[in-house]
Length: 225
Image (tube, rainbow, N blue to C red; front, side):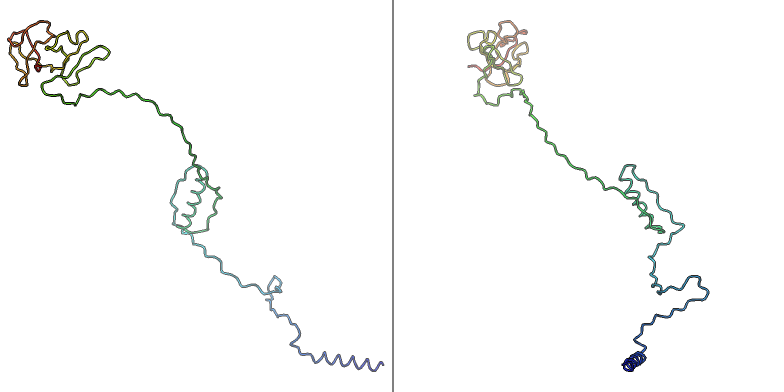
């Protein structure tokens, strides 16, 4: 039995001796300088990466001074913008920016106001009457105090109708509108319209006939009716 076990051991040793050397794991050989103070690393150094390009600072370059408003956070944004503008112009080390809070968005508040229209009273002056009267007639005027009618034509006055009885407007009676233009008298002024008659002006207080040419007897022109 023992000779059999010895034979098996020899066969195993022979098989191991014939295994090719390429199947064995071998570590890479690294040669370190003899004067290197640091121990040779077990792993080769990684390939160095190229650093990011940095703009070279120009010694003669001067950044333009800029003034920022002294209210927060606008001053923060303005200062960062000035740093970036200077870096873009002159180069050098990239500046560090100050953290700025977000700007507040103004909110628009709409309010509706309830207005009550004011009542206004408009007073309008009566305009002259544009109604054309028949020829050779006068517009009526006068009457009672409660419903007194004025003459609407400019430079016209209300007098007693000389062709009707009564006292006319002086005693709240009706009258006629005539032009306040003198006729007759000392100079014998004629009426402007052919066919009119010059009658006594009741305002002078006398009872005369202006057609006689008296110096103190002026009259007014009326249409006979």
